[in-house]
Image (cartoon, rainbow, N blue to C red; front, side, top):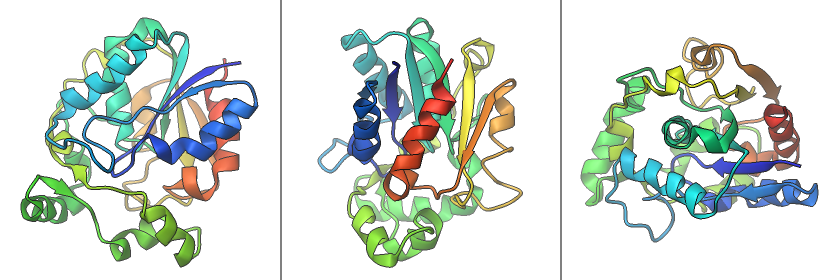
Length: 240
C-alpha cells in the first residue's frame, strides 16, 4: 500500500479530494489532502507562493509523512515542485495531474498570458487581491464533461483564489536537479489551457525530462466529474 499527499489547484481546498481519497483509502492506502495556505472558504488570503509552499511542507513534517507520492493538480504543480526541494527525502514520486511545470524564473501567470487581464482586473476589484471567475466563464472550460446542474454543484465548492502566488516568479533550479521519479497524469478532455499549442501534455510534461505518462478521459475537474477512474489512475501514476 502507498501513502499519497494530494495537493489541490486554484479556487479549491483539500475537500475537493474527498471522494477520490475515500476510494483510495478503501483500497488500503494512506491519503492526505491538505489545504494550501490562503485557500478555502474562510482562509486568510494574504499569502505569497512561499507561504503556500511552507503550508504543505509543514503539513508533511508535522505528520512525519515519509515515502509519499506527492500529487499536484493544476496550480498545485507549482507547489509540489517547491515542496520537493524542501523535503526530497520524504518523497517517493511526484505526480503532476494536468499541472503547471514552471521553468526557472517563471510565474504561473507567465504561462497563462491570455488570462492575465481578467485575473488582474478581478483581483483589483476584489478588495483582498483575490479572483473568483464567474460560473459562465468556467462552465465549458473546467466542467465540460458533465451537465450544467452537476457543474453548478461542483462550482459551489470553489472560493476566491489569492493571486499573489500566481504572480510570484519561482527559482526552480533545485527542482530540476532532483532525481525523484516523476509522472504526468493528463485528463484528455481538459481544455483549461487552450489547445493544442498550449496543451498540458506535452507542453508541461516534457519539462520533466524522464517521466511516466498516464492518460485518462476527463476534464479539469476530474476529482469531481470522474473520481472513480481518477483514483485508479493515481495509483497507476504513483506505483513503483
